[in-house]
Length: 575
Image (cartoon, rainbow, N blue to C red; front, side, top):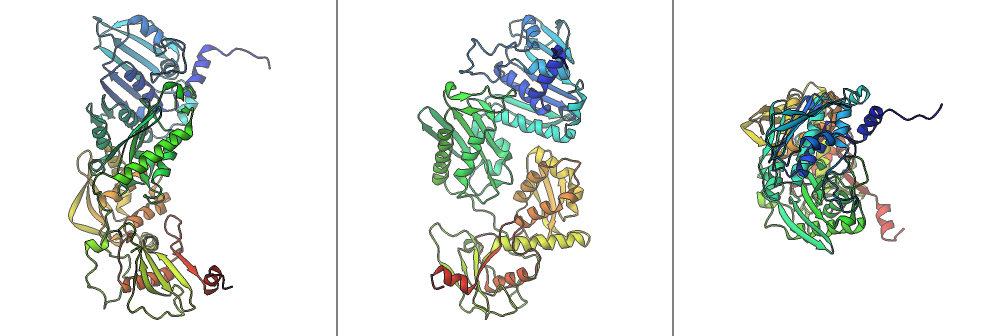
C-alpha cells in the first residue's frame, strides 16, 4: 500500500486522543488555561459526567477576537514567550488543548479582555472552525464543550458511566484546587453543588477537602535541601485512608501524580502506618525549572526530574521529621468496645468489667513488657492452638500447645477473620443482622463520598448498615451490623466510600461482597493495643480452630505463627 498523508481533520482527531482521553482530562486542560490567564475565580459545571456538557467560566485576562481565532489552531499558544522548552513556567504550553477538544466535540468559546467593550465568540464542531463573531459576555472567558467524542464514537464507547466520569472530573478539579488555593473554585454536577471553595490558605483548603476531623490535626512542615524546597501538610498516623485519594502533589504550581513523590511518601510512613493504609497528605515541591522536564507527555501527565533520588530523599526525610515532631498530642486511634462476633468468653466471665480507657491505649514507645497470666489453662491435645500464657505489647497472644509448640497470635488479624466469616455466614442465611443505634450518628463526609454510599444504601442495608442522607455533606447512620459491636461509624464509612469509589456503578455489590465484608470486619475487630482477659484470649484461640480460613486475615496476612519444639531447638542450635 502506498504511503499517503492523512487529512488534517483525521490528524487532529488522532492527536486529540492523546490529550483528551476522558472528560476529566478536558476539565484539567480548560482549568489550567484559566489559571494561566490569571483567574481568581473559576466555575466548572458538568452534565452527564462531562460527556454531555462541560462549562468552565473564569475571570482571567480574556482574549481578543484575533487571539480567539488563533486559540483553536494547533500549536498556537501565548504561554511560551520565547522558544525555550526548559524553563517552562506556565501550566500549558503545547497549544493543543482547545484544537483537540474542538476536533472531537462541539466547542464554543466566549471571551472578553477586561479593557474591551464587548466579547467575541468562536465555535468549532468536529474540527470545523466557524468565523469569530461578536457576542455578549463578561470579562474573562467562558468555554462550553458539548457532546464530547461525538466525532469519534469509538472513543466514546470506552468511557465509563456518567457517574464514574463525573467523579473523576471532580477528583481532577480537587487536585487543581489544591495546587492553587489562592483561587476560588466552584463545582456543579447535574445542577447539584459539589463544592464551593473560597480563596484560602493552603491549610484551610486542604482541611476543607479532607474533612474537619483530620483537618484539625494537620502537621505543617518545610524542608529545604539545596535548590529543592518542600512544603507539606500531613495528618497524624491515627488518620489514614483505604486508598491514596487524599494525597495531593504539586510541583512548581502544577498538580501531578508523580511516582517519585508518591514512593517517597510511602517509604516515609511505612514504620508508623499499618500496611495497606494510606496517609493523608499534601506536598508542594518547588525547584528550578531547569531541574524539571514537563515536556514528556502530550497531556502533561508525567514529569521527569533531573535528580529523582534527591527528590525522593527530600520527601522521606521531611515527612519523617514532621511525624517525629508532631503538633502536640495526636488523637489516639478509636478502640471499639470488645463485643465479639460470637460469644468469646463463658457465662461465668460475662459481665466482668473490661479494662478502662487508659488500659486500652497503645503501649508507650519502648515498652516491651509482656503481661504473663497468673494461672494459664492446661494445654489440651484437642486444641491445636494451645492455651494462652501471655499477651505481648497488648497486641500478640502467646500460647503453648500440648505438644510444646509455641503459638503467637495477632489478635486484630485473628478477630478480623472471625468477624469476616460471621458476617459472611449471616449473608448466606439471608442478611446481616443489624443493631439500631440508641442515638443515630451523624457522619460528615465529602459530597462525593456521600454519593458513593447513598447510591448503594439499599445494598448496604442488607449488610446491616442503615444509612440516610442528612444534607449535602453528611449521612445519618441508624444501624450498624450487630456483629461489629460498637465501632465509630465515621472511619468505617470513609473506608467504605473509598472502596466503592473504585468500582463502576454497573458492578453489583454482591460481586464485590467479600471486599465489603472485609472492610466491615476490619472496623469491627479488636484492635492492636487492646488488653484482653485470659478468658477472651482462650476463647479467641478456640474460635480460630473452628473457623474457616482462620490462618489468614481478610487482607491475606497470617493470623498466627506456630513453631514446633524441633523448630525452636534449631533456632538455638540444639539440632
